Amino acid sequence: MALTLGRKPGEKVYLVDDQGREIEIEVVRREEKLSNFTQLRISAPQDFQILRGEIYNGSDSK
Image (cartoon, rainbow, N blue to C red; front, top):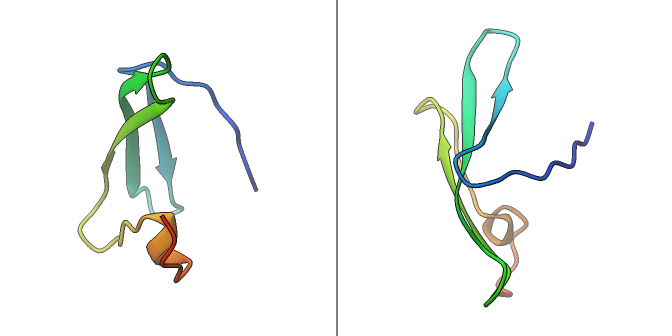
């Protein structure tokens, strides 16, 4: 399943599993003028691993 969203700073998305545990993803900052940069804050239970894509995919590229 995939979902594509547009979010503004301060807006959130929640991922909830079948046990009711949730991951909160909040857009903290978005800069379109200079670098198309988006900063996210991810809050999840401690037993979840949060990995950047380049680490999860095993790539050394930046």
